[in-house]
Length: 452
Image (cartoon, rainbow, N blue to C red; front, side, top):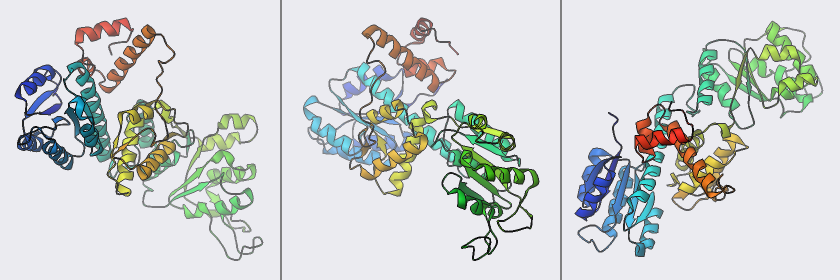
């Protein structure tokens, strides 16, 4: 039997508590409290993920200060708990004040259960994402992947290849769009290898002028050229015993491609102006955002070097293809930058999460990281909004559809997302969608979605 998620209902109206309990017991394990002391006791014992809170609690049920005291205690005890304020329509000011203090959302009385189900569903979904993020970070702590997060199949395939190749000395070629995390992958390979205690040296082949790049890579002898006043080791020698990461390898000039090829064949280098062959034990990991096969056709990149470098090839998916990883990564960045900048901002608004999921992220993970960092620094409120991320309000993909077409497209989309969140468990999918299993089966057949 699947364990239900815990929902705490804090309200001094016993009839309302009972009504909500019977309406929601099918979906959640319902916990009840009628005052501040009862709420504190349940929180300490059960630690529910989501709480609904009426601000009017004894001994001053006509006021709101007792409710605000409960809100503060809940958030201090567990900043991860999602608190939904239950309030009258004439008390919007208090509801907004509660949101400013860290409440997840608010809901007006009289309660419409089906509407409340939707709000609760989003709150529990976000809670599950945050829990998954924490679990991943704990599991990866101290591992080569501690700086990398992701649960989608494509990034999990990358992790699998990293684990296999790390234990070898084979050269690796990493491909992917700018900002996808190629250097993180290279570092993970190094950290997972027996070279982990030796240097990890990075050089961007496209960031250094061609006339200086050779010296940077291979070093030079004293007097080798004007300005060479002392002997200097290059990056290859610095990486001896460790790993040399050649970023943007597609920008390497033809003459240096020849010298790199010779190193891969002979494992020796010569400094500029020198005649001595120097043995270097450095593993080569290269990366590029260019299509090297096209570069080979154009004569810009050597075929033999491509095959020497790409003994193992790893292709990193762009962020737009990483499904739920966008929110997972955004939450991780938010937590990190809030801590670094001593900000209490630890939550995205629902609109911000929608914007993160819908935006194409042309700059990939680097763009996401920079937008979240800026938002944390510049935001004055407790929650990050789409405007803080400079994303604007998200547009829906259904805007240009007719009503019937849009309704069916949205229905299918929600079903597919629920199935991705609950793989192989149609009971949880039905619960996630707040429908019965027979209704789910009918919808799967209607939209031609396989049950597995």
